[in-house]
Length: 375
Image 1: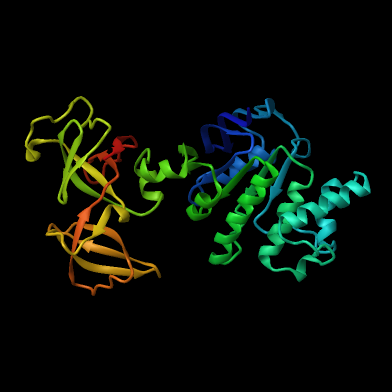
Image 2: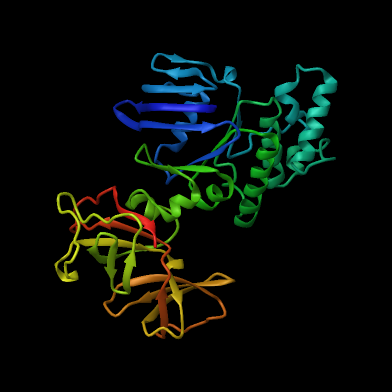
């Protein structure tokens, strides 16, 4: 059963619409994420779910019960929702144990003690209950905030940019730990972040938010390999769109060769397919190439010139220029250390073909994918 259901939600500030006709649901025990750039509406969505704001349209249901609709809003304290904030929001005058116990203080003392001890062990802070928040590191304080949110066993946990104040290494490690903790408790959770690495590390499903709308709600794997539109393709991962032409119902020709798509390839509205046409007479498309689609291969006759390189430890991300001047990215093991200006051999290894209808410069791009499929 869905723990959370959002149906055609709309939220406005005055005449400005921040959330536009958003619908999704989160199943019990699932970790979901609202991922998008600053100002896209994801935090407003979270505030509506928490009950901090009225809604202008649509409906929010928790475990089948309507908690928000125009003209009605169940107060936040009655929603059985736990919140983990960006700044931790711990009580500085209370010990770690009393912070965790804050939401369950009216229960029997023995039950409170048992629950606090269990959660401190779960978050890796066993024996730290006597300390005060200022005596802990940022990562430890965030664990306390999570334990406090989990203590009352809420129906839903909301995490608002919970790792943004931490350094990169700690952020990545803690996001994996928090996922394990939520799964251990069987909690249903929604994370809000602009960091796709956090989203990929934690979430079972992710909603890409832009301009107040859900652009795509999907698994991390599908978002990367089968983006629904150009925004998702550009926002998730790295990649470039290079010119191509449809040469058959399941084929697209690009400078580096012919790609085969399991999904039929449609050229453009009303055009049909380009079966049997020569490439110069077929419809133009833009094809997405990820860095892992372009493989370094010394034996390949196809060469590309190194114009930029970014060392990443185990890998180097090369920017390569093709004969036409088009540039592509290639992720290569770092023991292949090539100089700027050097020509290296490359070949394609495209597992998913993603192409979009080509559009003239200056015109708004189509949001629908031309084709996605396995090669």
